[in-house]
Length: 312
Image (cartoon, rainbow, N blue to C red):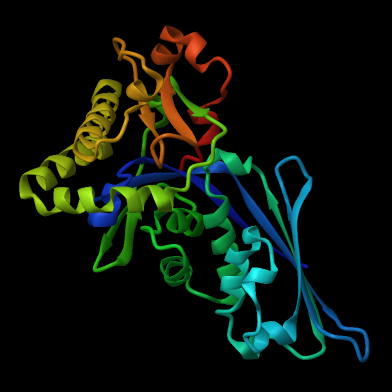
């Protein structure tokens, strides 16, 4: 048996803008996904099979797939004959070189999530990275071909460290980044329990974001705000920068901020910001905001930021 691991992620700032050459600031979390693999000799005169099962964070199976390896090797997989949840895996299998599969041997894969799939922490990006690691594929190339998107989440799963990530000529670039955990002791991640497709969300904002990116004044302002967040050395600067980024994008892209979404008002020293696609998955809220509106956030699952984030 071989085992592979990739951590989940959060994007603190740079969502939507990262697709247009701006920096994104992203961090790994202390939860991720495992992939266990087995290769075994096929019984004599039997067909070689690829079998996959997925286990959720509650250790319950939620998905399974069985394919004849000859169908994979010959490119004869028909996606419409399998559940939609398996299509992502089928697409990757079709990109594996045919000579990878050895005659007379079968395979069994089992993935195990450490977080709820509705959290938005990267169940797809971690799985993609794990499969590419096993099959010897380039995860950034596969990510672009299958999903589109920037690939910052794949970079986090690959490097497993906090990163400044950006695209240049549609190629992934990243460098190490450090966020002082002493600045985030009062932060919380609020999980809304509603999965939002970040790729669909990015597509909806694409045309507006393209116009913003072409405006040099807007580009400079966004870049400066992101630099303030990236280089912040104290809590007021960091939290003000995050609020400025959200306010700026909400006005330019006509997207609801956390405050507009919940129909609440900002509070003194409060912080509320979407993490990733706006409108679902999860958000960042500091203690001041949660204490000001306990009834608004009472029924959502919460986790202290410093308990969730994997600091370098």
